[in-house]
Image 1: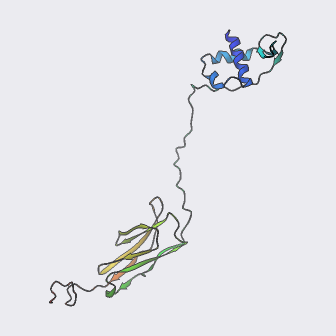
Image 2 (image 1 turned 30 degrees about the vertical axis):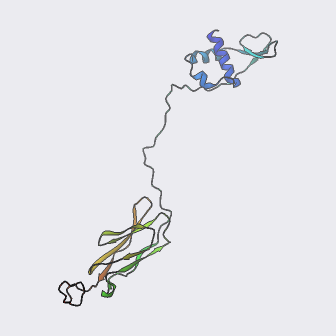
Image 3 (image 1 turned 90 degrees about the vertical axis):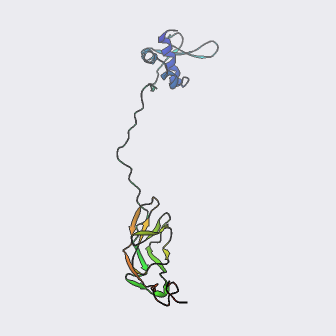
Length: 204
C-alpha cells in the first residue's frame, strides 16, 4: 500500500472515529501521512457486500469533505506553567475581639493561706474556636502547654512577684495573640518561721 493511500485511509479513519489519534501520533510517518491525506480527494461508495469504502478513486462513489482534525505528537514535551509566588496562608476564620486574663487581676496579692495555688481565667470573645488553643506562661516560661480551654490551675507558686501571660495558638502551632501581662504577688509562710512544719530547726 502506498504512503498516499495509507495517509488517506488513516485520515478517513480519524474523521470517522475508527482510528485512535494516539495510534496515529505514535507513527514515525505522521507528517507524510497527514500531508498526503490533506492533498487527496476522498470518495465514499458501497461495495457489493454492502460495506462502506473510502477511496481516492471516484468510481461510483461521491466526494466526501473531511473536517480538520488535531493530532498530538507524544514526543512533544508537556509545558506546565508554575507560579513562583508562594501560596498565601489562609486567614483565620475568626478575629477575636477580646483575649485577656480576667482573673487574677493585675497586681493582685495571693495570700499565704492559698499556698501559692491560683486559678487563671481568660476572657475570650467570641468563644474559643475549634483548632485554636491557649498556652500559659509564668515569668516567660510555658507553664501550661496549649489546650482548648480558657481556665488554668497553677499550684505551688513560690512567694514573690510573678508575671502571667496567655497566648493563643492556632492549628499550625503559630502564636496569633497574647494577653497583656498580669503581675501577681504571692505570699507564703517563710520556711524559717518557728511555726512552719517545714522549718528544719523546728523543735518537736
